[in-house]
Amino acid sequence: MGTARNAKDRALSSLKEYDVVIVGAGQAGGQAAHALRAGKFDGSIALVGAEAHAPYERPPLSKDYLLGEKSRDRLYLRADTYWADKDVAMHLGSPVTEVDPVGHRVTTASGSVISYKKLIWAAGGDPCPLPVKDVPPSRVHVIRTLDDIDRLNDALTTASCVHIVGAGYIGLEAAAVLRKLGKDVSVIELSDRVLSRVSAPAMSAFFQRLHENNRVTFRLGTVIDTAAENSEGRLALLLSDGTTEICDLLIVGIGIIPSIAALESAGAEIDRGIVVNEFCRSTLEDIYAIGDCAAFHSSFAGGARVRVESVQNANDQAKTVALDILGRGKPYAAFPWFWSDQYDIKLQTIGLNVGYDETITRGDPDTNSFSLIYLRDGMVCAIDAINRPLDFAQGRMLLGKPVDKDDPRVADIDVPFKDLLTS
Image 1 (cartoon, rainbow, N blue to C red):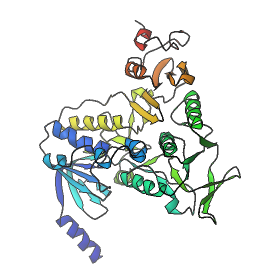
Image 2 (image 1 turned 90 degrees about the vertical axis):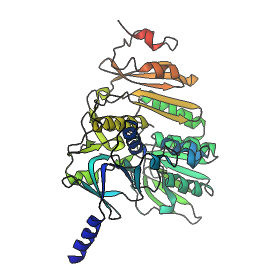
Image 3 (image 1 turned 90 degrees about the horizontal axis):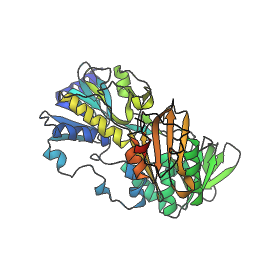
Image 4 (image 1 turned 45 degrees about the horizontal axis):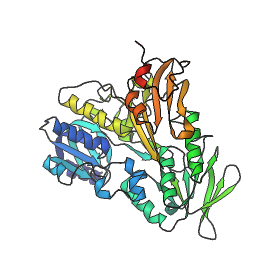
């Protein structure tokens, strides 16, 4: 009892105090600090991150960085001297494990206690683990952090065959890179189609065909039951359909678990993420949440509460919070957009297809240049553009607007979107 009290007393005696504490030194956290300073905020700011790295970009990890076409120093959001020049204190290498919303304090895993006036929770999330027991840890990889990719690249030097668990964007982007690196690649997916949680069947069929044309093998509608090293020193996977696959390593890309535990324990409202209002304020006083772990009502999702895992969302919510702290708050209403690069294909998406009930294919998928329009109750809610930058650029003018699915111009790729607007 006395020992625990003494440890707590020592922690409080070294209490660090800041006007704004940002938990999470990633895209959202880094942008929040930058937006505050750009808005002339002159109070003290601290960035507290679980990783030992300053804020960096995550999207290139599964693309250019894994492929070796982008160096580590080009991933960082700002130059080495930026954070010191802007008087942003960095507390890196230890995650926040406890939040005291009454005392306005956070505690890190290393025992540091940091006091705040405003707290911005931008902690992101962690990769969902492979739900298979007894897999040798050295054989299993994820794509989330710089260190993850460095570890994966080391393993790839002696691997010829890689199996990917999960046919979402991360899994498919990794598959494209690994094929460029000359690896044999198979993708194991529980659903009966790729990208099943984020796209319509027509888009799933396009991407599956694209990868199969690049000699990627798919095992759909199946999962790994067991995995073990065989007598040859390789990994033997027993699948749920009774077949066995042999590979050198596994990459798991089956989503993330949002980092919400500390705020949930502190009493914040949770709904698959930290519930926030239109200013990104949580239900706890003086605490905001942004980025991958924030759940908010979106007009682009028909009013549904969503979590959006994208750079756009991270950046724009960071700006929303900064303006609110600066006393110039505006409700978050940014257009959602995403992208994915696979082989020579660029997918650009605008809007959210949550709850869509119809789709219109615009152009011919066999040409590798087409768009898919998603409708919800007759209104355009999202557009996927494949190698169609003009459709992506003009697409926002159609969001929330009705289109006549029987109008032949809608499916005509030579008709600009602006010509489809009704008066």
